[in-house]
Length: 90
Image 1 (cartoon, rainbow, N blue to C red):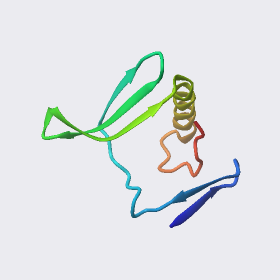
Image 2 (cartoon, rainbow, N blue to C red; image 1 turned 180 degrees about the vertical axis):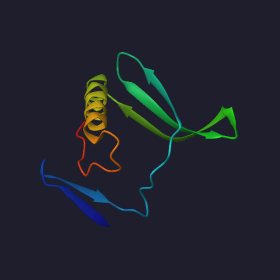
Image 3 (cartoon, one colour; image 1 turned 90 degrees about the vertical axis):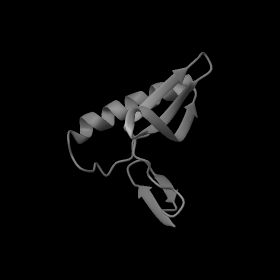
Image 4 (cartoon, rainbow, N blue to C red; image 1 turned 30 degrees about the horizontal axis):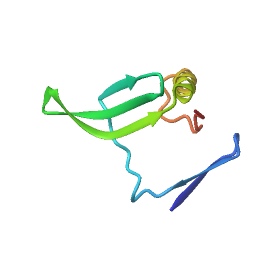
């Protein structure tokens, strides 16, 4: 198991590289209602109209707002860098 620590925020992440793969996405479907938000993380399979859902993530509306802000801040911070070295907190 690989432990990573973000010293700026004092957060320690436990990551098992054997059981926690990174799924590439080229399409995300977002559903929302008054209770929360669901992200269907997809990959295109063959034709542009065929998708495979590789992961689903659900969260509260408040957490979704924090996620959007953290992603926006990270993209602005990284400005095309290959790796930021910082964990965005959402």
